[in-house]
Image 1: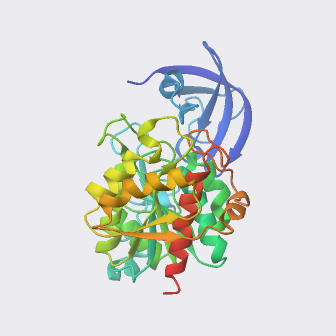
Image 2: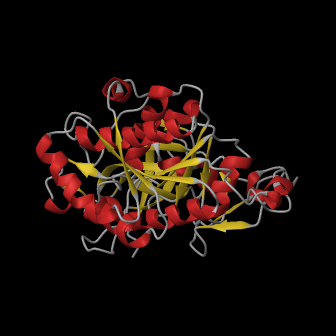
Length: 361
């Protein structure tokens, strides 16, 4: 359950889009804390804050922060009731939690995009890249940009990881490189809000006018180390949504030569579950050339059972390493950088390159 602390803001450390990092003194010492101003207002030095420290106490990888639940002595004002603020919609996200957020859905009656969304029922062949981890996002973007510098790219964020898009410093760094972010399901804080992955994809195509979309969960994930107990398995459902809506699904493979866990070496067992058991409709699965021969053989053997449903596509890798190293945001997955898990990022970039090639076909 919730582990509560009360503390006092000692310093404002840094800010990025939608978030403020604080230094907070509590009875247990000084901790890093994160506040979302759209939820709790703007904390200031010497403010008393209420914190949820559960993930911090447990030492969870992505949960390295205490989270500000309230600034109780200086509550933010209610938003103006003029109907123009995105918080004046009727989509309730993080439903029935104490910090449920009420947002304006892209297809609600009050939305300026209502008419477009009512008429939208197809992705018109738009390539959509799916990935099971948020860390693949900048690598996929790099792969697209390696061959196409002008393609409009939208990010559709599912609710398998972090719910607030504001948590992601990756998204903050990519804001100038994306047509926009659409948060779906229980996730919130995107440029547009959608209730389902399906409406999120349609909004990417018809509201943001994207040429390519990328679908993944937000930072972090939920996993138990079992076959089915992983939030990223839902990317198979995203494949089904893309194909059903007339898009061109491209599955980014989770490949690793740096993960110490056997179940994630080569092709992760989560990828095999998502594409082999959950995805019922066919997708392109790009495999990069130029990998270590032993790793390449492992990948080919693991993917062989999937070839009856999906199309395995070989992708050239010339220039992708340079594109990855030029990424506007740092590359990191499970605390491993580009050189510590090169195959992971190269495979994601290959998926982006393949998606870009579909624009010309």
